[in-house]
Length: 302
Image (cartoon, rainbow, N blue to C red; front, top):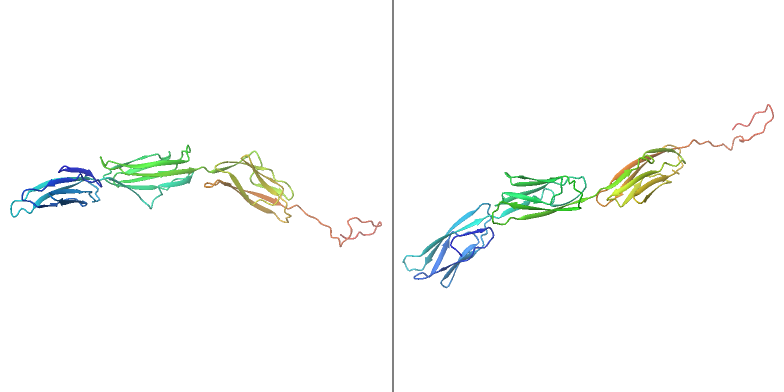
């Protein structure tokens, strides 16, 4: 290896060999970076190793080799330099949003914050869905990824963050993914019965119809009165039937329809109000409903 070398952080130097001769029996070296050392084997002195200092700017190390053992005579000396350039550094802030996120369409991601250091002066980001942006502050060397995905062309977007500006040294990479799940959509067919209805006891409701789509594979319906049922078929949900409860006062049934889509359910609500019919009954301990009396005689009071 040459006396003067330039390398990247964490790279090993090319071993530099020196012949110790004449009156010299050994050698010492000063000024080497941490992780690099000299060793003597016979008459050969070798400098080797990997610089281990964590650096953020180029570092110049001037080293000096002096022979030893010349019995009072002049010792030989050589000098050289080792220049170490920093690699780019990239660190994810664990208190910010995760690198891998799963969300529903229309939801914002949790802001992802990345800090750049070492020899890096910037970043390059690729693979984000439209609607999600990357903003880099060169003063603080901080990258923020944020926004609301509005691209549903694929379920998962794999993105890559690479540092820039480190010259010939390493530009580290971080990767992540943004998975977008479709909402389960429930849409009321307004040409059919309204979602809120009021009927009399014993009268059927007008059929209520919904289109079920998006990521929904099924629905959960709760809160319907006894006698009113729901049926999902070919992407359409129909609520129909006749409330059968025997009631003496107005009853309000608040029902809920929830799409079953795994990650992103949709919810609709409605009400069915049932009013009681008027009731009249004969007191059998009183006079008969049908009576025959003589002219001028009273009927039995009922």
